[in-house]
Image (cartoon, protein in one colour):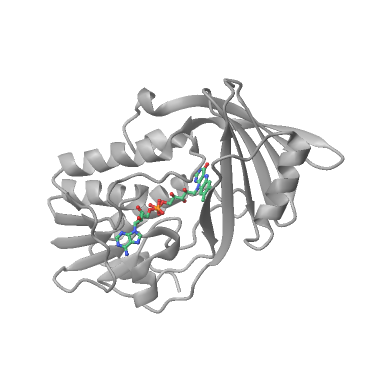
Length: 267
Ligand SMILES: Cc1cc2nc3c(=O)[nH]c(=O)nc-3n(C[C@H](O)[C@H](O)[C@H](O)COP(=O)(O)OP(=O)(O)OC[C@H]3O[C@@H](n4cnc5c(N)ncnc54)[C@H](O)[C@@H]3O)c2cc1C
């Protein structure tokens, strides 16, 4: 079958890889001139290796604990399955290479504005602002804002910190070669809350990066055109905003339903 995948993030690259491996003719369209999401903490459960071949080179640090800092109490949670800290951009490129090796064609500088007509199947994996979702006139998810910055200080410890704030939270991630601070919050309040957090934790915000974190599951009822992925379908973890494991899980559900997208739909 001739398949268009719109977006070459982790979802698009993964689907492109798996669908090309099954002998389909796959084109992945990516609007940017390069692959790799830069605004992401890349804190991902080691369950990742159930989806993609393990690659030690991607790992910057390993994390076993999350310390949740409530105003009057601190709780330390031990992860049943450890987490790895990766560069999300490097992971995207690694999976995009798997897609290319299995025969998928990746077209860069190729922004898709309307549902492409010359394909048997079209899958929107364009993330928070997915165009296919808009073309299908689906409900838009609720958006949180994610902000993050790095402090140039080595930290190889295995504890991430979280601070609940309103209906979001702030975090500190030891990335090995540096430390990441970030926030997920209401877009109108995020910057102000992050400034306050930086003052409390005594770090300087430099090279601030921002991206949307959508929430609220949406899947169309259409047998040939669909959307997939944590961000296009609003399928990110309600509390942490983490999306990579969820995105790969939903991609596998879609692959099991393939070629009839209707059996992957929920109303
Ligand atoms: C600050 C922040 C921190 C996060 N931290 C974590 C974390 O620690 N762990 C975790 O699991 N998740 C985390 N996430 C969530 C995670 O980044 C996303 O869930 C994940 O990247 C979604 O992947 P995706 O492939 O669905 O979308 P994306 O990574 O957004 O990829 C979509 C791609 O589609 C392209 N595109 C969009 N529209 C078009 C178009 N019309 N035509 C062609 N191409 C198009 C885009 O350029 C992009 O390359 C974080 C998110 C943020 C914002």
